[in-house]
Image (cartoon, rainbow, N blue to C red; front, side, top):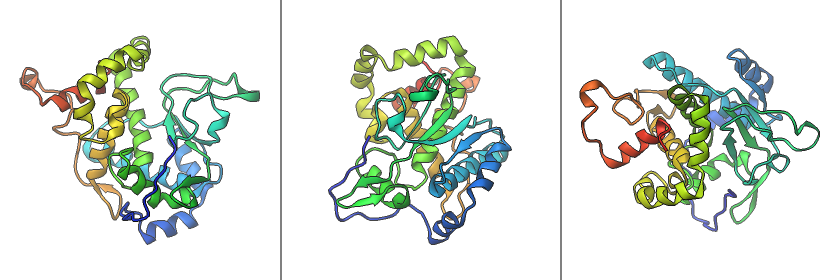
Length: 279
């Protein structure tokens, strides 16, 4: 979606400090790509320092959660910066998306290349509208605040867009483990069908808008918005280190035997269903 706002009085509180901005301006993209390669993740950041640095910080946060709390949160298989006009996707103005299944996303000469699931794409676009034209990724503070103000994201933290896409990778892997490849593919198709979404909106819209408006788009975005919000709330915002295991006592923690028949609050019950691919 295109990020737009006619508001001139926006409070910039996204958390991108002067120190972080300095790190971005001086970061070495080739070294960042090497860090990803060490974990088996292919990257092409198209020389975009903001995307490269924010992606690296998101990777480090997930790795820290896994190590500190003995979790097994999945990582992306790849991260690429592309002109979305060259991809077979409907929303050319989205800042990013996670591929949910092996797909032929590219047009042109490499149109037959199959992109696997859990590959993240960020849009190469340079401008967004805030009353004046700005370079979108260099104005990450503005994007984060505007997205939050317009209900597109659950927080106005500057890493929201990046952690949200990482969350989709984590979610996909969890569903794959629970359902297997064939059933997962079938369930995802169902989750985006008009008949399912009609009932989904009737049942969950009001509850999910407690997270943010975008969480009510579909069950995948419900988990993406809620999971990334909980993750961000667990961070020490100055050093980007997770302080607690936000999965504990959340819809994303497996229910223990003595809790299996305990009634769960409706929103959490819905999120747990979506988390496990029960669409």
